[in-house]
Image 1 (tube, rainbow, N blue to C red):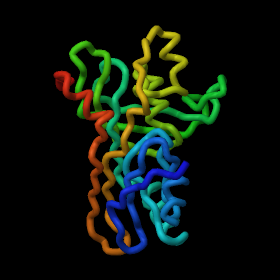
Image 2 (image 1 turned 135 degrees about the horizontal axis):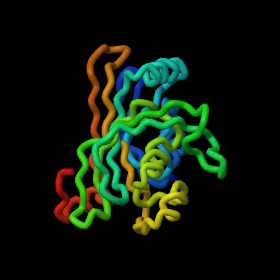
Image 3 (image 1 turned 135 degrees about the vertical axis):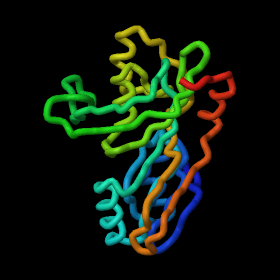
Image 4 (image 1 turned 90 degrees about the vertical axis):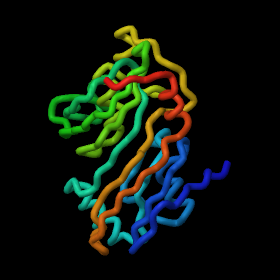
Length: 212
């Protein structure tokens, strides 16, 4: 099966940003156009992915990411009524049951949740998350551990199922990398890129969601 095409949104001075489709790994998306990954987003997640044309640019942009010089905003649909908050966790590779999650000695992980629109029946929330740190599966884990797994999540749902949450079926993970903002290290100009929210996520807001 061929890799679905990615749309190039930005291409300047060895930095390229594409819109990755859901269902394609970051590695597949990069390989399809012959570029190098600066960071990754999950296979089920769609949206903005930063690539580079050479190893030096990769290293340069990864330093900028670690220093907090790249703002990353995600749109999500989660179970339940999610309120604006700051999620702070110490994430480890194995929390004791084979899953990534919170644990002693983990890496400090922070995400800011905002712009929450809650369904009238409180079954789901459409919201925005800004990554302050960027850990593997961070948002998926943090929202699940807060009792609000992302709709379409199939891995980090054990705790929710034990607590009686009824999972909503979805064809894909309802998580989208919506915005990237950074100062281009070469041109020194501000770059602010946005990706349109897919219908799979945006359609949930048509049912009379209200501000939290």
